[in-house]
Length: 452
Image (cartoon, rainbow, N blue to C red):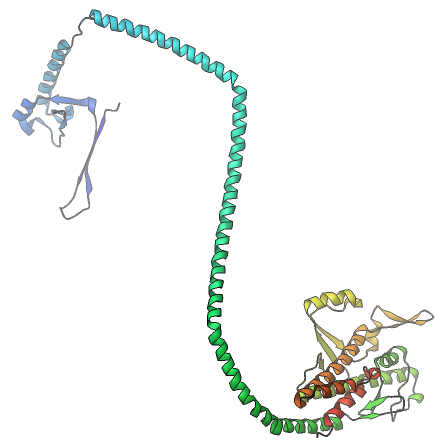
């Protein structure tokens, strides 16, 4: 039980101001309060109390601290309180026990004895039960631990299932939206189809006059201009038959008639070319070989330049881009990442490391000597093999073949006769598939042939 009392008084400046401030905070011990005589308080009034005295009222009686009373009145109150206590003490004298009280006390004593006996008996039973069930308690604790773990696992499973349910609900909502869009598309399709058919009819009605106009004026003008430009290219890069062995010359430079012969000249130093105006028999073998390689490189550069011009004139792009650079032209191949990986597995020297690969269309003797692979010449001699140069020649041959095919297809579309294009492609003999000058000469003759 506590005897401490605390009084806080808060005040406000006005009725309209709702801010309060603490005016008084008093804490007293109720045991230090003295009882006041009501008659004396009424008689003396405020003169009996010190300034700021506090009167406490409990159960209709007045109390205050001794220090709050003036000294004469304090002595009077204390005397009154003392006499009151004496009177109360006398009036509260205990009476003697009666026979009924003694009987009740005896019954209580017997009840307490019975209660103690029951308490001891129950305590023994509890101890016996605890000793007997100690092993069961351990089992229960282990089972409780296992069940707690299973509950935690189930909570995780529930959380995962709730997440899966939310994901499934999102998928269902997305599918419903798709179904709505599909339904809307299906419903609006007839009107859209009707609009498309009307536009197709309008386009079809306008196409015939357009085709006639193209056939009558535009196409003939284009063919005439192409014929004139290709004739100029033919004059700039004249291709003529050099000998009876099938060698052609371009701009006066005799050129091998196949890739095999090109490599034979570059690898084995076989002087199979007799360029007009050159006295090869009077030169040293090395100078003869260097002269033949220069002829091959110059002829390849002439072919690259002429084919690039024909591609621009006909608006037919080459399968592989070629860059003219004097006697050191190159061919550019653009690969996908998958092709890079595949080519690294199948082509020796692992020469593909990028999606853009350049191949030389010229033979460099010094560069070839740096390569690791070679061609055996007998007696322990090995001539270096330039794999990148061989790859460039192969792609140049493919460039020419594809260009002829695309040119034939364009001619077929113009004439509306597919057999004309097939006959143009079929006119290239199989043994001339890698005869660069023969195919280039054929293309120029094809483009400069008189039209009906």
